[in-house]
Length: 341
Ligand code: NAD
Ligand code: TYD
Image 1 (cartoon, protein in one colour):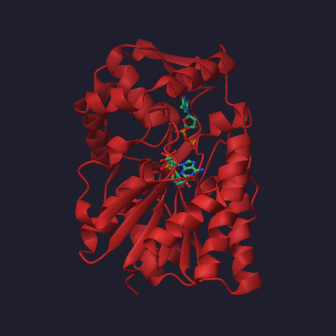
Image 2 (cartoon, helix red, strand yellow):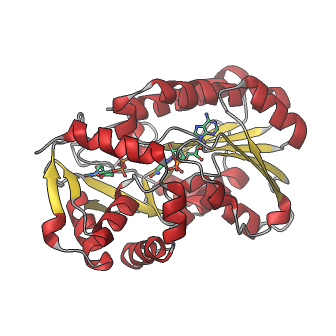
Image 3 (cartoon, protein in one colour):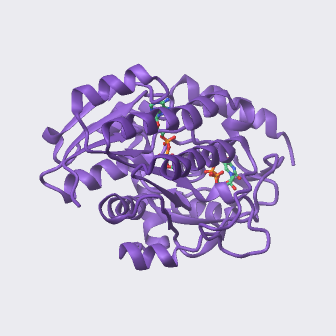
């Protein structure tokens, strides 16, 4: 079913923005509202040059505020919500979990309540991190136990469980999606790929947590966005859909690739103290989702990484605009916490 009025939370951030752009460019009839608090990770710059900009409206607001959400619903009258607003950085959640509790847990319940009252569909966007470390090397299915390792993942798991409980208790039309690590343009440059790109280019040290042999499965944000479009249109209530790239790579290999692309020197790589509770391996089994939603990623990793690195290097004005005081303070506190390896 095509939804005509879609409220997207968190679309001033990275994946929400990729989703908003795909939504507006693939459906010429859709109207979209962004609801975003513009935290350190939300950037007005991301809402410039939108395709179909005349069909989009931005509203600043907090998903954990019932008043802000009610006002957004009253103003826009959505017929579906795709919920991507979240606190998302594991390292920040270790330093201070409070905003993660508020946004990822309470905010998700506020939106669930609003969607139930309005009788509309909600897609909750979640992560492979809810399954925790897949030390045995197997890919998690939606039936695998949730074993989150850090406050970020624990608050995401709580949100997922609240959504699935709303379906069971109230028969609510809500579905959950889980995805592996995303990369692409417009990601706040404190996450691995943009951070290492900009530091490599600037000749700064590249801090690798621990031995750097942790593996992540990277999916391009636009492939994730296409999966979310499919889940919104064709997903069944109460289901969990999974999106994966299909191949894990070590952090060290990723950073070496970035170094080569951004023109840095191998001596910039510096092993620092490990992230506490650092998961070694994530993997998702997305076979059921691929079959049911007729979705598959379309981008090969290497050329997509090259294009991503090139995007950050070609957009210094964007990089400067998003790197505010909040980002600098966090990076200092984070590396102080890491210390030497
Ligand atoms: P991000 O940190 O880049 O952006 C988050 C956005 O949410 C920002 O625009 C921010 O301003 C907004 N926001 C935060 N708190 C808010 C609040 N209380 N009210 C309204 N807006 C608020 O995040 P991202 O990487 O784009 O992730 C989006 C979603 O996808 C999250 O739910 C995340 O858990 C999930 N996810 C991310 C990844 C990944 O690799 N980045 C992978 C799988 C799933
Ligand atoms: P990140 O981008 O924070 O995503 P996530 O923790 O959600 O997977 O980090 C990706 C991986 O890179 C993770 O294993 C931690 C590691 N990492 C570093 O080694 N150094 C860094 O400076 C950062 C930000 C991450």
